[in-house]
Image 1 (cartoon, rainbow, N blue to C red):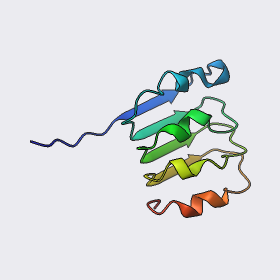
Image 2: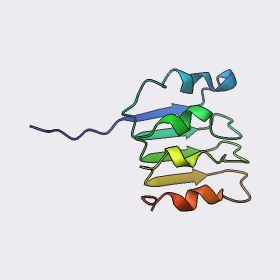
Image 3: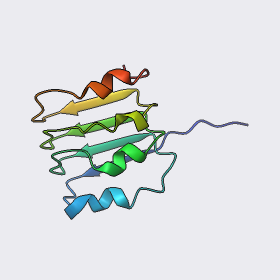
Length: 101
């Protein structure tokens, strides 16, 4: 029997220096959902763009001013939810994510 599972990691209020908490997750190749809440990020850590199976990316309460341009590695991204940011614009690379709703 083939089962369907959903892997979600939620990182809240951790404030590790240099995005260390994300580095510990780098081997989770099946990660499908990541919630980054109140961690003080000004941009997404580079490790986020290595989760090629990521379908859901949620950020709230971070000081995001730049999302970066490495979204080509997130071809499965379906939902991108951004709240309480300091963004003025979104990178053009987001437009090429065909599954994004």
